[in-house]
Length: 207
Image 1 (cartoon, rainbow, N blue to C red):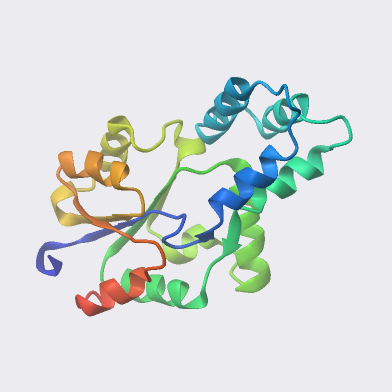
Image 2 (image 1 turned 45 degrees about the vertical axis):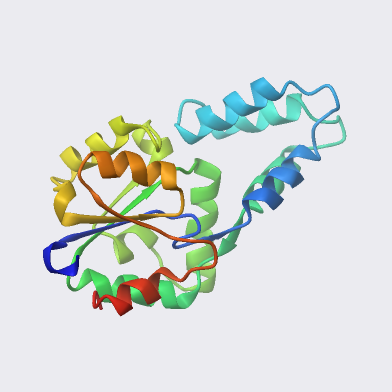
């Protein structure tokens, strides 16, 4: 595989950034009333991830379905609890890979989570610009206006970055996303729970 790879395309969650997805959804759900309209909540989550609604509208929608005692900070804290952090070795890996490959990031994310990541890398890793430091280009769902596993998103990034799928290794922890990318000609790799992506790339001689 390594011989013809020119581009490395990383997912963010559970590949670069450690997540606690179940815990965050549980904490968010604990804010809601018994009669909360879950279809409205799910639509707001999807719209927020695709950039169709603002952070204020997202928070206000969550509060509209919550007990009166809860405030915006409770929604933000519950939602951002999904993000645990980035092990230093993964940032070192990205730095090393950029010297040999075009390194890209593709993530289903949202404004609140991206703000958290920016503050985190500055505070913990003393990095002023996460995107410029580690990637040639990034694609965030809420800024692009599309999300995985939509085939339209993969088509967009290949055109926008002049990326040849056959020369690109795409790494994600969700098989559905990889299946769509595979149909468009990407080389793919499923990052399994608890797996360190850096070990996989090192074993195969990428760095």
